[in-house]
Length: 440
Image (tube, rainbow, N blue to C red; front, top):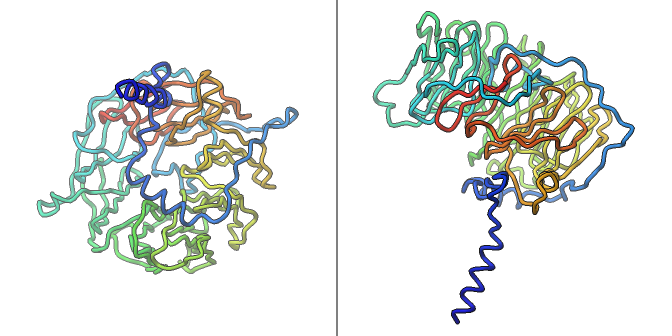
C-alpha cells in the first residue's frame, strides 16, 4: 500500500512538470475563475470548428513595411480615434531606465494615458491620478465622489484632450476635469452605469451605458445632445461595448453583438449588422469579442467565433475568417496580425484575406527553450521596431520577427499589471506594485 501511495505521488509530481528554468510557463495556473466560467459559455455557443492549421510562410515572401511611428502621446485608452496602434518605433534595448514611486495604494486601472510627460490613470476608489515623469511625483490626485459613494468600487473610463480629462463611471456619472487648473468644469449624474470607452468628436463627447444606449453629450457642459437606444442584454458579461471612429462616422459595437455606423455630423444611423453568430439571438445571449478597429475604410472586429473585415461605408462583409481572438489585432500597412483563441500567431493579407503564416505560439516557445509544450496566456499584441511583440500575463515578452519566427523571450523588469503603451521609442507600463516602469 505504501509503495502505491509513493508511486501515485511521483506520477503527480511528474505531470505537474514545474518549470524552474525559464519561468515562461508559470502563468498556466493563473487563469481566473471568471475566465473558466465564461469559457463554458463559449463552448456552448461555438458551433463551427475553429481554424487550427499551421501555415509556413513562403520563403520568397517579403513583408513591405513603411515608416515606423514615433509616438509622443496616448490620449485614449485604445491609443487613437481608430483604435489601431500601427508600427511603433522602439529602441529594443530592454533596459529599465525609470521606476516611479508608488502611484496609488489602491487597485489601479488596466489602462492609462500619457500627455505632456504626465501619466493619467485612476484607481478603484475613484481617484484621478496625474503623475509627472519628469518630477517623479504625483502632481494631483482628484476624487469627485462624496462620502455616500465611498463603499463603491469605481471603474472610470477616461479620455484626455488639451489638459481636460473626461470621465464616465460605473455609477452613472459623467464629468470633466481640468488637471492643470485643478478645476471640475462640470458633472452630470445619468443614473445608469456607463460601460464603454469614450470618444470625442469636435464639441461632442460620446459614450454608451450598460443598457447599450449610445449618448452624444455637449463637451462644454455635459448636456445630452442625442440618445440612440440599441439592443439591451439581460446578462452582463466581460465584454464591454466599444467605440471607434474616423472623421465622418462613429462605429459602435454593443454587448449584443451589433455593430452600428453613425454619421457624426447629424448623428443619424448609416447602417448596422449583427455579428453574433449564435443560434440564440435572445437578450440573454452572451457576446464576446475584442475592440473594433477602423483602418483604411475597413472595420476589423472579432466575435465569438470569427474575425470580420467589413466595408466601413456600407457594413458589407468583405470576408470573415473562422478564428477569433481575445486580444485585439493590429493592422499595419496591408497586413493584419492577431493571436487566435487557440494560440496561433496569424498574419493575413488585409486585401485578400489570404493567410501569410500561422504558427502555434506554444510550440514556438517549447522549441525555443527545448522544453515540453504547455500553455501561455496573452495580454497584448503590439507591432514595434518592425517586430511582433506579444506580452504575456506572467510578465514575459515574446519577440517575433515580422515573418513569425520567434527571435527572443524576455522577462520584463517588473511584473506587468496595466496594458503597455509606447511613448518616444519606449515601453511604459504600471506594475503590480503600482509603480510606473519605462523600458527603452
